[in-house]
Length: 330
Image (cartoon, rainbow, N blue to C red; front, side, top):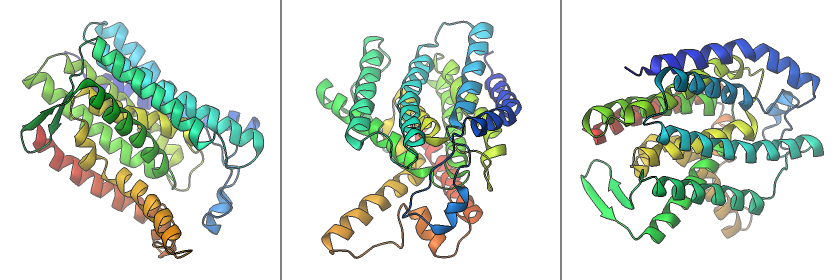
């Protein structure tokens, strides 16, 4: 029996054990976070807290999954291997972005155009490989309604590229408070683990091994949260947030229900929509603001809520939406 407990435990132990060493190393290398000048003034105290900390849970997840390969073999491992490889690619894009920020001593890394094109290329490559291996079909299943729509492959590729890149950037945008992205994504990974186990019983036993990956991610994030929760001693940086965004999107396509991201990733969606609405309203109104600050977690900070309160609310909302979303897999 393949048990996600193994991958969770290994990733958690590795992340917890390596945390202090990585923090010291990043401080020695002076890989400190650069705070946006137009961000909340009270965030300036976070200046130079070690960033690129995503390598901590990335390493923990990698070690956990390698151990799972040794223990459980390679059969039926295609889904999680492809998802993890896509996440690695996104993490690499994030690390380049982080390194540029550190090198230039400012909160500006890759250009938006360069980042988008790299993300789109990785997304299309992922879907292409999944198609070649017969792990995805151009069918869109609408959660809760038992309705499926068959799409032409070209339309499906466009749709997949939009969803994956959008999800990746939305998760990246959510990483704005100590532990916010980590907590929300921990719950999302628990959801994907549970759903993969259920699908292994009702659809295809091959989904059983897929559950090992979100379990490992949850374990890695659990260990990372020890150092990332408020007040954070380390930040994941774009290295970590883009890696996690790739995992969230990849797992949704791996279970062949990408639209489940709408309820499950509701916090990610609210974050990115708040940013889009703020920019759009600012331009249309010639300088007026819809929110006190965007993304929306900063708006709530400006309203007087603490980081812990905002993170707790986001986590509870995510937990409720994930619980409701399980009903889509009856």
